[in-house]
Image 1 (cartoon, helix red, strand yellow):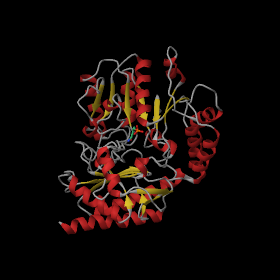
Image 2 (cartoon, rainbow, N blue to C red):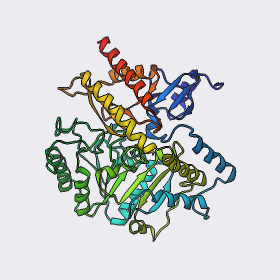
Image 3 (cartoon, protein in one colour):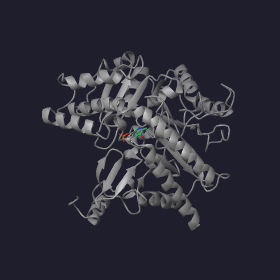
Image 4 (cartoon, rainbow, N blue to C red):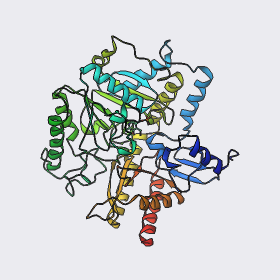
Length: 457
Ligand code: PMP
């Protein structure tokens, strides 16, 4: 039972006081007034239940208010809340040791932060200090943060402001085989691959060669001979579950390293078992990054982030101090430690793989059924559905039309996200505890919402 403010008052405060532009007050025409959550479900102030397939942008990893994580937080709340680094409290050390046990050698040194933006900001600093170079390359359509440094990494006009934030940051072409100039029918969906499945003979994907060619051109035209870093999400999140051709990251890493740069995997959305077959998204590309950044799912909704790198790279801080008051606080570490245990105990990774594959197979049928469902892609529970006016032009479905379907899906009890640089992609990234029955419910709801939209035309 909710006994707080009226909906009108909440909207008034959001418009005037509370970050007025966030989600353009607030994501839906008729906003959802969320009041409570449990596992894959949310309840609004009127007691309506929603299946949450967005999880606050892949933030809730094991489930809203997961009993095990909640208990760990409650226990720690009664014991100690404090800053991170001044004293040697055990929880921090236990957590860092546990976290690196999930990472391959030589990624064994951890810096804890409070968010993904902070993690990427720190990774930028580390790369620049370690290499002595300044320039950083990212992929178009990426989202790496909204801070004044990380806005330069992010490549999406919606988050850009006329301030000199992009100094030293160059965005290169995203190897998007659906919307980009190369790719198409030989790069079909495949829910079992982190990369876009490709029917070309091994090592001979024409699309991949062209996109790698674009990176080579960026390196030849837009940056100095030595660079600091290359950031990429293993599967783009805000960009709309964009998957790269097989070998793209592998070849890109080689080119970047030849120019002295560090390769940074932004696992803020793809990490912590979300892609199903692997614990980390980069593992599906058969690469080992120099730095991995994490946030969101790390704390199942508790604010936290991390940068993991090698001891050699981390030594760049030897001549200075790096301090973060709350990054890795006792409370954050207790929560994040319980999240790691829960992922293992609940079999979240396996569930991501099975339910994700099932969901994508069902969505692919809807893609074949409807002219406006242009593309279905992703891996595990990091899924995108790209909507188009028609499959020939691939023109993005206009924002008003997207909003209609989006609102209808919500009114039928399912929350999903929107993304892509034209706002044309529905995003699905639920808590990893969802079931096949939940997937069936969503598939029926989405089918009906698209059908309703077509009927109204
Ligand atoms: N990286 C990625 C891939 C993200 O999706 C986000 C947030 N959408 C960030 C970084 C920034 O994280 P935060 O909002 O916690 O600062």
